[in-house]
Length: 258
Image (tube, rainbow, N blue to C red; front, top):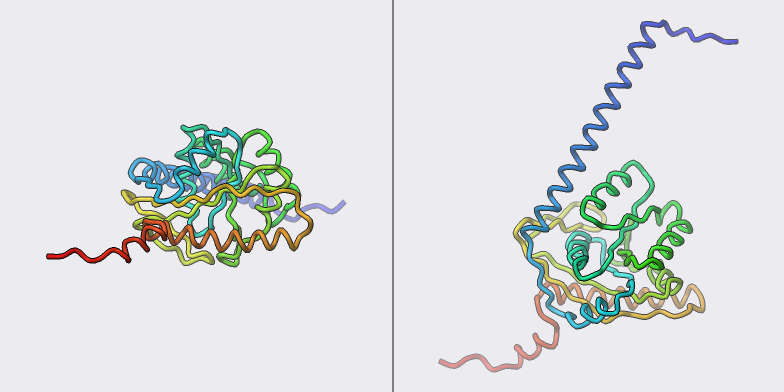
């Protein structure tokens, strides 16, 4: 049997070094979790939400009391997620798909700190398991937030995953356009918007899209393409603060005299 040539002193030194390294990693993870959770609390306390389009659609969806499949672009993850979290007091149980990784465990703790349902799974690594978990979540009344172009893009290209989920789970798609009045823009594949404290979230909501049985992948892709186009329109409405019909009326109105 081969014996280790490492001396007892060196082995003890390595164990001490590993122990210190593990303690540092745990501390950094705790610090990051604390900072992210507190920043989200700050946004929740200081940012105002204004629904500029689709208030009736939201009221009707909440009145039904059944799960929906909310969808937004990954770029608007933070304002759309905080808007949906604010609907918890009206009965909406919002969930997020979180990967079973070290980073995912960190995000699970952040989500649960804000009373958001964490659904374990990764659309990029364990797609079948993730779809099963999402479908089961809808079955128990959770509305899982889906980002049409996530998790890695390309940006603003709606993938068919949310369409397939809505079909299997029997829950309508619920498109959410969101815009923060002030934000930092991250240099990432989606140019993510991180809202600044004391800003305003303008929200545009579409009527729920029921999806029946799908006849094939092409139909799912066609629906996804239409959803992407509509989501672009909703984001534009949120950015301008008024629906297109209101802007056309203001453009046709004569300028004030005097």
